[in-house]
Length: 147
Image (tube, rainbow, N blue to C red):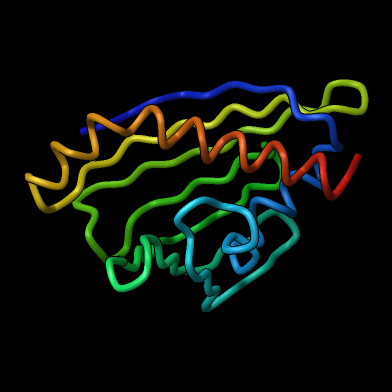
């Protein structure tokens, strides 16, 4: 399995950043290797937003679709993502948001394993580089939209 945690201060309000992270249909506009994002079966209550989401990632004809269950817990400002279907054997992804003045402290945790052991081995070698590139893309997008 591959896992990592990233902690950053992003110069935008917490609610703005949460809205951006939940809008996976916009990911192809700024997330590296993301070709398409779709949301299904969205439900909202006073304390919880849930939906199923598909992200198609890759390049050209070499791509995979990851299906996940996303839950945003409003009271704790936490987004939890778990795997439903696709090339992942296991996925646990958590986003924690804490507003500090007019900025947001974002803590992002991911732990996953691909079903294909060969691809899993390749992914482990480039995982940190790819994760940092994606984290930078989220930070730059938030600055572009909200600063």
